[in-house]
Image 1 (cartoon, rainbow, N blue to C red):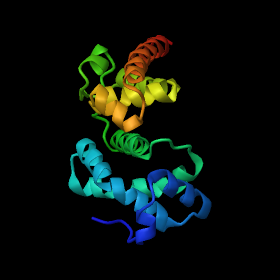
Image 2 (cartoon, rainbow, N blue to C red):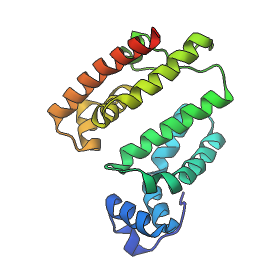
Image 3 (cartoon, rainbow, N blue to C red):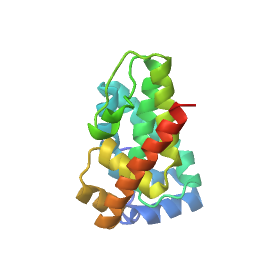
Length: 192
């Protein structure tokens, strides 16, 4: 499954080079080459959340459309993990818009069990989901990425280190501190 045909010279460039080239030129062929490298992963994320192949294919196209603008304005250190977060967030927003029946549990099971609990939505659960999303955004980038990969994407410490390029001890620290900061933020904002 290819998004845009690309030439060999562009294919040989690494992610950072392609991002820089796209930011400079706005050439969609360059962005398409970059996206093609990870499109199968984006599709997998979408299928995991949306559960339907056609909806997932549509989401893959919509995410590319988001990239056209977002890649130009964001500082991206690790495109693969950044794209994963973007795809996950896209799917979560799509689920919130189309279905009022899916929410993430924010009790201790959120962090400890590493799984989403689907419940009938009410105002309290909707508020909790909003609080969690806002609190994730307040974490320092290293903590946010590490917590997301470890708890939400269920990666092990080694995988988180490989994906992010962080040292193993740093990964453990980011996850521990991120979990603590997320819990404090959620408790603080849930009581308001």
